Length: 270
Image (cartoon, rainbow, N blue to C red):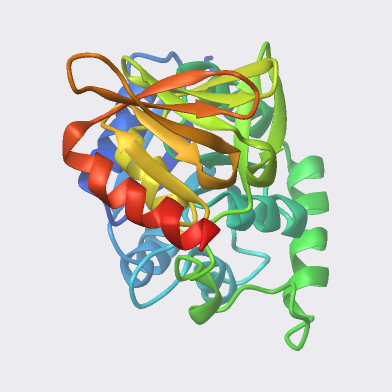
């Protein structure tokens, strides 16, 4: 007799995010997607009703956060959980709290595989009990600032201070303060930190929104530069502009952004 399938519930308020996880699970032997939910409230109801073995749980949802879903369901009834988040600091918090693992949007296939296989191993009764003990210890600390509340899970006004990077199965967090500039590379972005380069799957607009505009400026549709790294604004023959950075790199400046850049640089030095 074959083993019972792993029952999976997907919770995310974004349809494309739910579909992404469903696509990655499709066709796997011994895996059954028993349902999806787009709010914390429906997630709680679905967990009680469907009794999944594994839940992919979005952290930031309107009305009820992923952490509040855990509290509402109750530790004893909570399945093994992989938290999903768009913000690195919340992912770290989720992992430190008690998550089997976490996924930072947008995540690649390899990162998903790591999280899924780890979660599958932990669906055994013994490991799940240990996880619940960790959850219980953390969620009882209601006064601790380490516990996220609904307000805590709003996008930070101060923007991110580090960016998550994966390479060869390892994860590191690059401090934003060390980034010289960012360039687009197809569906990826490349973070340039001195002589080092880190490739991430991130849209330039998303990165621009995450970075502090007081420190970074998008000089071209495919280039974001840290303002204090700019040494010179250069006018090339033909009327095109470029910036030369203190490290020697020279980057093109869009004509439509040149005037705004000059104003920013003037404000920086004036």
